[in-house]
Image (cartoon, rainbow, N blue to C red; front, top):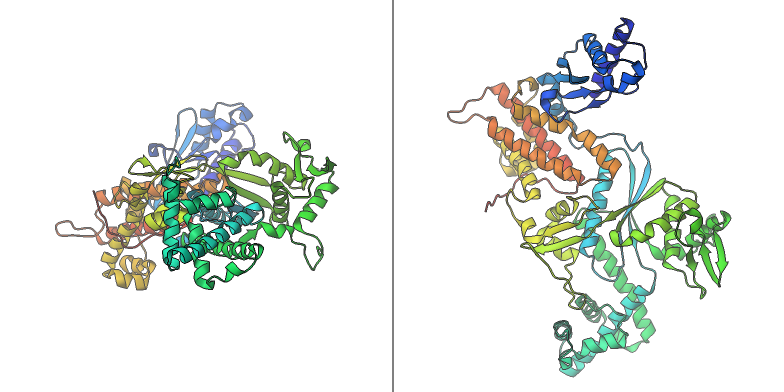
Length: 622
């Protein structure tokens, strides 16, 4: 419709200029907008005001001339000039409601655009150390990043999803040492206490719990193993109960086999086997919350030299450093290798290789981003807000490597967990962190994802676990899903099928049986019916803006508004005939079609934020 209105405006202007009613000038922009107040029409053109200076003419005069020469069109019921020169277009019911037919016919292809023009874009949106379970912050980046990828794909971008595994560095040795120490403690407990492995595991976990509770260290005899653990590893250890569980799992698999090898061999085995298990757990959890990646990138790989091909004998680090050196950005000082980032706006130069020959963490960033740009044209990283200080140095690297303006970072604020309005206290010593796995297990994937995506990434989220679990209209995710399920129920009733039969048929087939063909959408003239059409017609532009602005959270607002519009429509308009409340058959079919359009659009929007659209739900009002 906006394309048609622009065509009409340009034709009317050309006719007005030919008639001499307005001076000759070229119209660059018709300035089409959707007025917030529907009394001002479905569309408004501000071209008269935009062109006033160019035409040396009052905007109201230009607008009057355009309207006077406006060609007739069957879709337009009225065109009028308002205020200083707004040209308001009013559509007839058939034209307004045509979007309902489009939404039904196109399903999940509805509201697609080509804003991205196929730009090959990589989005890295979870970066985690494989030394423990994912935390809730990781969960937010997963929900945000995956939803962004879905939205950008719908808007015409060529998207690659990436998970960055921080598996290079001292934390991996700390992880292996932690499991090794706990493994040896379990064997010691089994021998001293005469326990089996499960009993020893519980004994060691209790010892840790005692340590956690004894914050003032007033009862040292109640946690000797935890004290030995922290002292033996110099405090440089992972002390969570999950480490005890990992050690117990290794014992169950191999018995005391690893007690009879060198410390180095034991630590190496536990480090690598534990690492693989942690990555598998992350992969499984991400899949469970509908967040799958095209690539799981290992940090270690940037240091591995290729064995064949044109890059044989070099690593990603070597190639990235060579490029920076070629561009004149590397120099040696005090035995270390430096990146001259101040030439590109950084506040200081950055060390890449220390004097002792050890690579800095920044060296991995350099090589990783070099590798990214060998695969894609644009890079988006999603980081926690505590990494704000890293943005400029990485931007400088990307600029130096020859990719200025092609790197961007979205910073995500943290999640504040509450229960019944009260903050959940976290303690590093107590190990009371709520993991992402625990949150998903308690709340469910749908409610977790919806809540984590419901705010802009630069806003912190207050996630009240009990409120999110509630099955009532006060809970946004439940409210939206219930609207979808309610439409499905209406369609099933109209089609005369059971939920089981509908599940086998599919809702599109159920809707086709209930509604039939050749629907007369012009019958939908009630304000609540027209409001549904208007809301649905906004979706293509909304998705495009979500993609451009990297703001998928806006779709949750749209879903809630559409659900509210549907409930208002259903209260105001009789859809199916009932005793004492007849409905014209054609009007009933048109209203069923409107319901089906809402169902289809809610299904699409929920799919874009990675949330399911159930066909059946139980409602539990407080």
